[in-house]
Amino acid sequence: NTRQKAIDLDAYRGITTTVPLDDGPVTLGVGVSWDGATTALAAVGTINQGRGVGIEVIDARPGRQWVIDTAKELVRRGIATEVCGDAYGPTKRLADQLAIALPEHWKPLSTDEMIAATEDFLQALDQEADTMPIRVRRCAGVEYELDVAELRSVGEKGRMFSRRNSAAGTARLEAGLAALAGYQIPETTIPEPFIG
Image 1 (cartoon, helix red, strand yellow):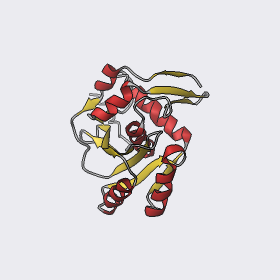
Image 2: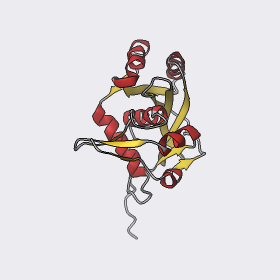
Image 3: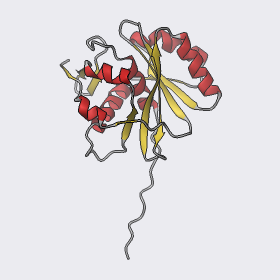
Image 4: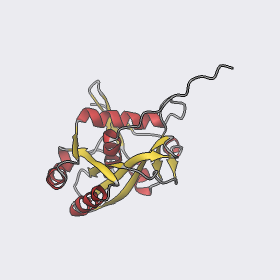
């Protein structure tokens, strides 16, 4: 495993927005810092009338019960369709509790899914990429985590943020990426070319 400085904050600021997520169902993601001090809940849904995907951190604070209660309420109200997260590592206890509290809505994620979401996020930093735009709702906590985060390579599969070596933790990042990993990007229809 090799480690590197995560990202250029100017590139990250280029994909931040103050625009909220569109109305409609969202996918929730959870993350817990390596030391267990911070638990985060994030949502992913469409943004800008479906023209992009938005990541928004709902909250990050100590404890687990508030995440379970908030997720249950958002699912009950039909705002969230799924709650996603890593079923191992620092998130394991929360994952076990969510599997019991929301058995039909809990989705444990594989390492490969988290790697794919991380790579999608990193590719979004390239404004020239030919992908559906990903935007992140401005959050000082996410920017703080990114400023001192480290990436680690996972064999030949791709990269993930290092929970252990990121100085400010990765709870918010992990929650956002977990929601992104579980989110089903809506299919876009490409209009037929106009030949006149």
